[in-house]
Length: 369
Image 1 (tube, one colour):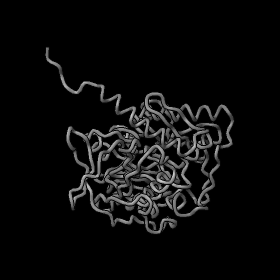
Image 2 (image 1 turned 180 degrees about the vertical axis):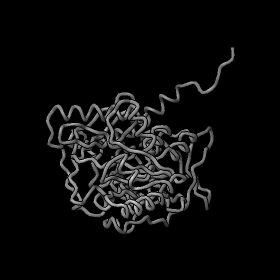
Image 3 (image 1 turned 30 degrees about the vertical axis):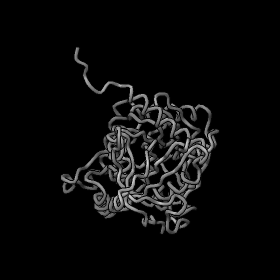
Image 4 (image 1 turned 135 degrees about the vertical axis):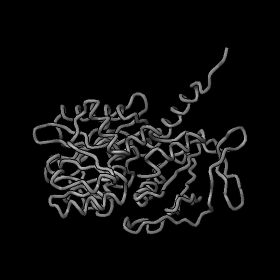
């Protein structure tokens, strides 16, 4: 029997961020300490089927972000509860038991991975997992709820308003400009990686942006465009989270779009760490930790900010499963803060297990005297 901790790495998924997840998973596989951990890789295809994959060979066009794809030739699998309530993976064709699951690392960005759905499944299955729980994940994913909670907690955020699909016919460009100014951003409320996000300055651009954003969600965010530097900060921990040194995104595109993030390696320059005064660094770190706590997060998150010319700092959003690609900020910021990639993965897995053990000690039924 192996003494290594068995890690199930989930990647892919039904999200529009499927390809980003594959890139992230490859980097986690490359970085994880094989002396400590045994990796079982499950690739979820775009139809939602779970496939047992070879962790060393699970991608097509691995070096081309525009063509990367899951090599879903592995046997379909299911997560079941075995003897004594022990969770296990079982193949669907031969009903072969693939053994126990010690901890799950869901490297699943966006819908059905970062929004509390997979977290709820793992919680019901009684399995430790990396990252925020059901509440923190769902709140962090929904920009509408996220921004309202941050605003109510007194944290500084850009001006915004929300439009549901039922209200879309009454939405006008003139009203939007009156509320948040021009130019402005139109975003799906529940998505990440800048998918479906548009910066607009005219009525024609606005109408097209609204139509596109509603392709991805039933409600959209209309938000003021902030002129300022884009600062990001990584957070790590459970009850006592810590913040990394901040970094800066300097886009070469008009804004930090999906293409700039994942397809064009020259789409942005990363300043790691950011060139900031010590007081600004401290304030960013404090706001990052405060945002993390207000939104009920655990494990990990990346908090994104705008730093305006007058020194004001605005919270843009939180990402509860940030990218782990080779150009992603989250691991790079911890590396420059003194925590190497393999140790970061180890710490994330340990935090998952620590939280699981803490929650297992809680009473789940009423004791009658």
